[in-house]
Length: 78
Length: 460
Image 1 (cartoon, rainbow over the protein chains, first blue to last red):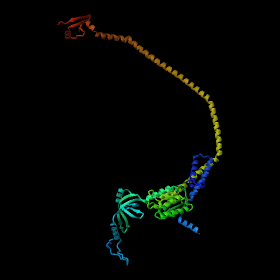
Image 2: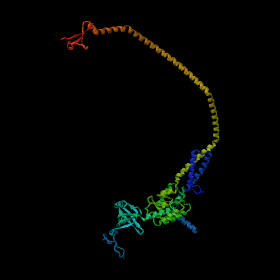
Image 3: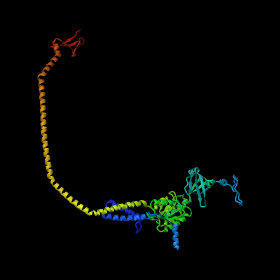
Image 4: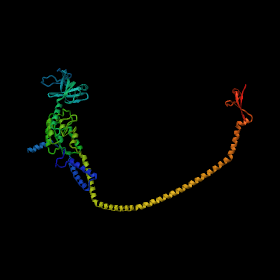
């Protein structure tokens, strides 16, 4: 179940990294430069997670397999 | 079959038909029941399936490769039978004893044939369960129960394929559960029968087609629960092998925990209800995560703001540090100066204290001496008074007292009495004789006079 190498970051990996970043920031141990870098990375990751959630947060799209297959077959026949 | 007598006037029959009748159906049904009940009672053997207990009756089917027959028993009889023979499990090989019966029905209830079961014997596991168990072991031996479980299941799939019956309740349950999770991606529905003999090939075909649709990340196979016989299509070998070799994770939701099919073993995840299947397909609770992301973003902003603020405050902090340093230096210098003055001040304090103590000691001794002197003077006066009193005693009171005592004493002296002419008589051994009788009895007497003692004898 590991992430494929080179694949874009998955939702769960991005989400886990955001939690790690917040834990580090909350600990107060990060230096000023590290804090700024972590905040910037965290913001990017949250945007990534939010965009993935937005992709499944609109209107439910229902497709019927029979129609898809029929369309593919007709395109192949044309 | 004996034809019942007409109880109502006959309706006109089908013209030109050579067959007798028409007869009222109730009478015909009653006659059929009598005929069936007259058949000889026998024993039957087969696999017991589709066991359905109701309040008064217990229904099941007996099957083998050649056919099947519906069976029924009264609930009370059934309880006695299983108390004697043991409770049969679904798919178990059994022998039943009984005979044919027919429920004639009525204007409001349906008729039905059944084999009335009067006794039961368990004859071991049926072929059905044994076949399924053999296949499970075979698939396990080939490692096919694990292939699906090794596949990566996305936490937030955008497209889910679902195989289920078109009008089934499972479809509504799935949609409701996905909506509750706040998931509204793309669903590709692959409708297929899910319980008859056509089901397995149809599901296999649909699985292949769904896996070929671009973007399908997870497939759910769902139906409501049922007896193991109803779920047999999910124990189909071709179906199980197809799922095991599919590159997309399959979530099985085809029965309950008590009715585990082979598909449950082969699939990546096995769920007991369509609702659980929806949660397994979308592990992320999207609604909750949207809120959590908003919170995380706010916290990040706050950390960022603080970091920027602290960077801007660096020059001020440096100035304040310098100021603190300067103040610390002055304070240290003052402390050192104070410390250097400390020994002489200490000595002076000690000296003053010693002088004070000396003064207090002297004053104390003086007070003590004066007090002792006063006490001694008081004691001397007391002593003097006592001496005077004692001297008076010796000189005056005591001679007078002595004289009085001498006078009192002389009053008691017997010598004075003897001098006045009295005589004391006593026995020879010195006992005082106080009467003439005592003297007569003693005979030998001693008579004491003032100037001496004489012996005497009583003659008569």
